[in-house]
Figure 1 (cartoon, rainbow, N blue to C red):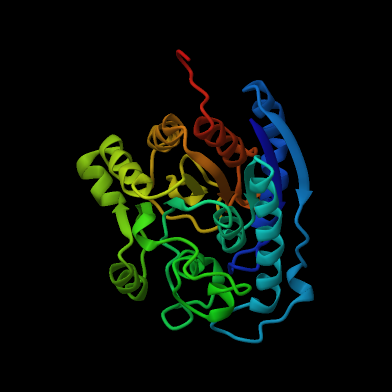
Figure 2: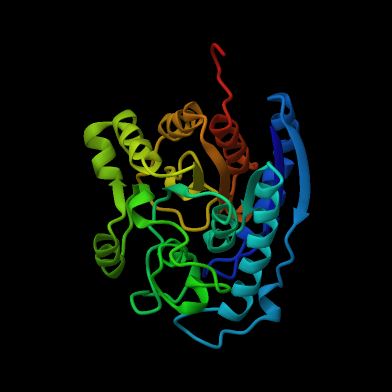
Length: 299
């Protein structure tokens, strides 16, 4: 497998600074070496150009930094689309989750995708429902066709980028009231942490995979490390207590790998400022490897 790595050092989508250093932290955790150990050919494409926050202004309080985030998303989309067109696997390192506005759009240009969004948050707000104005809480809604036109349609491409019925949010435990309504009306399937507690991760991820592969050419996995409990992942952009366990997260990635349909992946919201000895970045690398088929036992 040929893997193209793209770093997107963006933290303007969130209030808390620091996740812009996430791509460097994940690389420093021996990402390329470990991928090559799986037999992959790795092409590190460096970082997509992202302006620092001090160069940008908040012109719209309900869409903070939109004037800088939209051009970033366009650059990411173009880079990922080129990677997929060349038959490579795009691995996009964040940065905050607003990078998915570009990464998933680029991957969907050449394939009809089922989307697995593993996150403590659904990121399904719009400018009308957002309590914060932070765009990292809006990308999934925009990809499903909801929200400000500039986020929903970066160019003149068809809308939505992904069919909401081909989207599953897994591990949610911190949802705003407005986005709950948006999710229900859009028809997105959500497996909250409470549901996972009741039925188990194996059943939840089995149902999720069945849902997103029914009418799709491949799976895109967008993984926010804040989906894990902060005990396992202390260095995250928006920590929420009571998350997925270490093994639940790995099982989800391993089961995605077993489908043989993974077409691209995001790993986002690693915040080295809040981390302990790069623990969260090393965990991010482990989860990437699980999603790409690494097994502790057997073939």
